[in-house]
Image 1 (cartoon, rainbow, N blue to C red):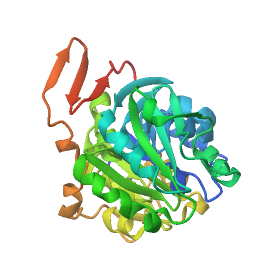
Image 2: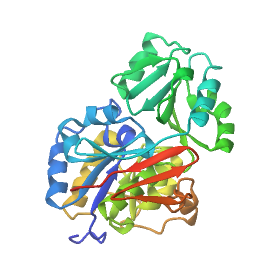
Image 3: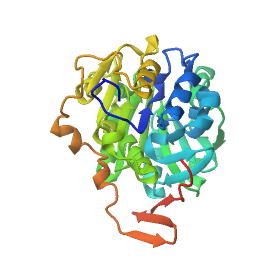
Length: 328
């Protein structure tokens, strides 16, 4: 790619909050220019978020129809408004989260399902909490989670006062039972089936598109973004990123409030080296990064069942469905 020394990229993946979006949750005003540049260069541009699809598509606006979307921390892949891939959590696992959540006043449990988002009726919340909730879930319904029998894709927890300090320790024991527990922001945690991450979501997208790791660049800022580094040749962290992300990623760019991510994506699409520090080219990734939970080489411990052009992966009661990719 030009004289950047990075080579060509065919897939560029970016997180939203703390990354592509500024600290007020706003998109860059000229982002469609970035989208157009990627399309012209033949690059698949993807948003990868812990949000459900409605929470991803809303801030992206028109751009969402031109992009691939990895939602729910890697559990679902969307393209052209169509669901292409989904992974679900066995009921006995997500119910453990619900029951523990009911022990903590002020905590909100959100179930992301095939039919939208639901909050647990047993856990009421105030207007301030509802305003925070709507930023990430534009719409939701209320139900008694214990009576729900449908597929659950992800469980999110919201707590308005430092969830990492005040809530995370109570849920960490669930990791021994087959769940991954991740803080995704000051007020948010996401819980999914062990082995599902943003890294596995990108790996699934790579398989669907035929694009390899060496052709992939990623952007992320928080702890749930770290698995992205294992499936990309280059990884870019804004200056506002969590210290562990800065250690794991290959490049450091300016703070997200300067629209550094959109400017860096445009540079890659146009064959230029983004304004990055401390390295002018990718430095070797620490071996420890490849040993993170969610390594895509480990995501399918169970036998694949061939079902014509589609595939279904069955693992511990969860069903992972893959649809024919069509045109990307």
